[in-house]
Length: 94
Image (cartoon, rainbow, N blue to C red; front, side):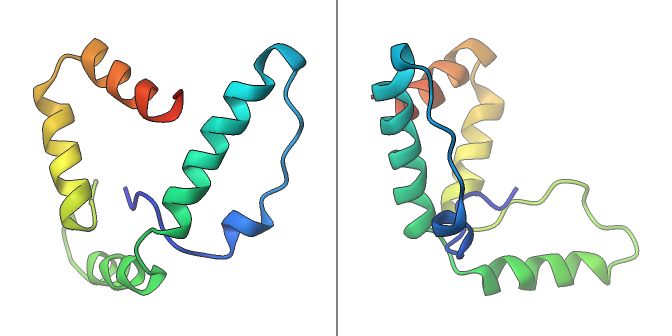
């Protein structure tokens, strides 16, 4: 679960225009995601974690990288799914 990673994928993303009814909301959501990706952690940090897991005999199935994502994942485990979904929805549907 690497979260937002600063790579060339953000600028290479091809987007299909949404239907007119959702255009503004979709553009705001994608802009938020792209901002987070551009300010994300370096891919080398993710690669280091992947390599570390790959050489272990019994790696954990799910890994998070970075303090921010550890905190978010811990919080989401504690909250009811409906609250977690509402929080994430609010982040991307401003």
